[in-house]
Image (cartoon, rainbow, N blue to C red; front, top):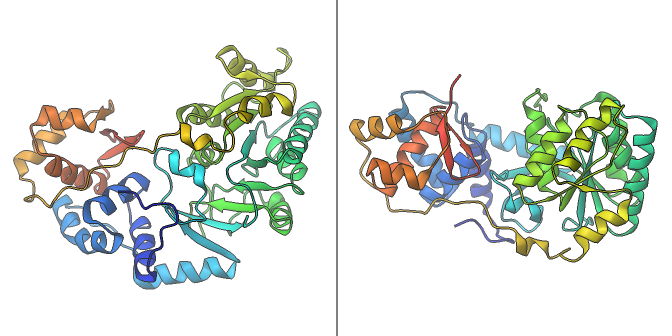
Length: 373
């Protein structure tokens, strides 16, 4: 089972969880399966050598000293590592697929993490878009909402600055010490100085890459009850955030714009597809108000594998049979079990092996597919 909110972990287990998560090919879904399979991160680490031997692909397992160094480094920045299940883990993140097992969090002790609205949009925002963002963020903040965004140029920057006095969360694509863009480093300090928060799932020293921004975007939407898109091109990170928000059962709002402005194409398309058209903060508050702040009752926790007793090590025939059923099309684990005729425990163990070998990828928790280079 997932740890209950308010769970406490021993120092040894916290270090083990950090080591496990930082091991090659162990992402949020794999981490969760390992912990559920073996009962704790410490036990999972003990089991890894045998698992890795069966994959035939040696992986780098983070040492105890490296984990302690990361813990000390985070503390030097005045931040902390927060584990899923602990009391100060952002509550809405509990309900997204592949929730990060650990986040680095600086500040935010007095923020309301359950009354949250994400605001995203174009980096090359128009003057009108910046003005609209400031109005929205200011009004939402004054009504008790925490504003969440991604610390990017343009709309994100305007949203953070307008909500400095009422509370804002900046989600980073890189490590806490690798804020991007450089020009927003002073803004990050202002956010902390005013009681806001910086949050990332990446370790210290991690330089953000292009593929890290969609990962960041899923946390922007996951931290929020709803996402407001102010300006967005037809293909943009803001539309990725909106899509992720829908997958996470969040509301999506969009500010309409001129059909002649390419920066309005994405928002207008969202409205055509069913996003709520808004002209001010009251439109957002009206939609969220009836269910907020107890909206978590509407969310379901992501799929979690059952903890089954250790089975006999899978045979090569078992391995070939299951691998032969997988393709680039995601398939439900229960369907894999049905078609393969393998036991639950054997299927879980093989999927763990495939995952650690980098052969499969997960989507929406329970769907698995072959990963192609």
